[in-house]
Amino acid sequence: MALSFHYVATLAFFVIVNLCSFGISQDDVDLSKGASFIFGDSLVDAGNNNYLRTLSRANIPPNGIDFKASGGSPTGRYTNGRTIGDIIGEELGQPHYALPFLAPNTTGKAILYGVNYASGGGGIMNATGRIFVNRLSMDIQVDYFNITRKEIDQLLGPSKAREYLQRKSIFSVTIGSNDFLNNYLLPVISMGARISQTPEAFVDDMLNHLRGQLTRLYQLDARKFIMGNVGPLGCIPYQKTINQLSENECVSLPNKLAIQYNARLKDLVQELNENLPGATFVHANVYDLVMELITNYAKYGFTTASAACCGNGGQFAGIIPCGPTSSMCSERDKHVFWDPYHPSEAANLIIAKQLLDGDSRYISPMNVRRLRDL
Ligand SMILES: *[C@@H]1O[C@H](CO)[C@@H](O)[C@H](O)[C@H]1NC(C)=O
Ligand SMILES: *[C@@H]1O[C@H](CO)[C@@H](O)[C@H](O)[C@H]1NC(C)=O
Ligand SMILES: *[C@@H]1O[C@H](CO)[C@@H](O)[C@H](O)[C@H]1NC(C)=O
Picture 1: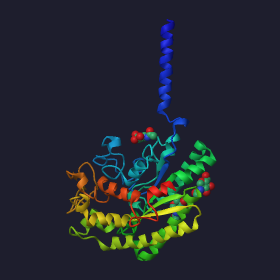
Picture 2: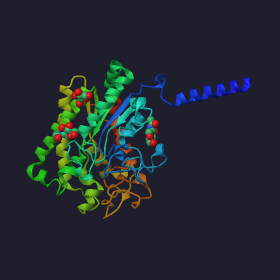
Picture 3: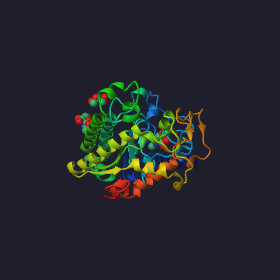
Picture 4: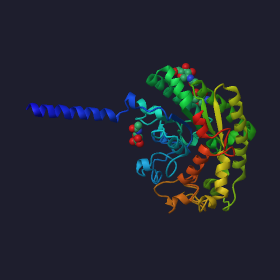
């Protein structure tokens, strides 16, 4: 009787010890690798839209088919595997991918490894992505970071929290594509905007909003920023299909708008580096990187840079987004584009690697690894 009581008590002790080790207790939070706080659109959404009533969703197969952490189930990522944000966090040694802010289990100490606020359809401007009914625009993403900020204060105490955010945390911002694709360039809905605003005036508005949003992040102790520019929108399978282009052509207006915005973004990065003491903004030249992959796709082991791997409609499978009824290519790592809008994991890997360790052609004034080590 005594023996079995002892046995039960010992067993209970082990169960309790083991249960504790499943949660993250104060002592085993390893803050040495820092955190990623990810802002942006569907290029880096890791599942926020799963929790919104929205028409922009990616938690349907075969999205995520190559995402190892979920065993190939869809997670809300708009690609077959990891996003650029996932790959960078992993390469920097962070214990897990930045969790979607809206996921119910994104609470407690898990947020210390990073949080993802990105949302498919979201843009710099509030009106962007209205066609999807709901999405998190950049203003709201910053509001949500303000909530996380207070939670980190509670977890670490104010002075440790400030130091962790300022020195160990990387803030990446991948936004702007939808302000063109799902706002300025959208027929009907944007008619008003396009009649009343020249491209210069629209781009000006975008930059002014972005300056305000980044300044708010700075006020909340963000110091190390990665600012992605807008990719060659005129070369995505969707644009090539609806404009009935041939293999090696791109639509010129979307690319022109992206180039125009990108030039101004570069100036903003320089301005903020000069005006916000202690902050470092690095400029990620996603446009040139993706253009290089598209132009010289064979050199990188791809067989096509025009056709979506997963999609339907037209010459480049570029009209209907990827879903259960889409046709899917057989070699997913041979396509630059996973779906009508988004790069494949294979392309994301090449892009992320250049941002981490590349030179000033693609990432300036320093690469992400050097930014981390500042
Ligand atoms: C939260 O839930 C998601 C989906 O079930 C899972 O992938 C993730 O690992 C969980 N995160 C934590 C910190 O438990
Ligand atoms: C955009 O929406 C947010 C949140 O609803 C609001 O705080 C902000 O003022 C809006 N910005 C503009 C320019 O309307
Ligand atoms: C963060 O939230 C507080 C209210 O809780 C507000 O006073 C403050 O202005 C917000 N900061 C930013 C940068 O939005």
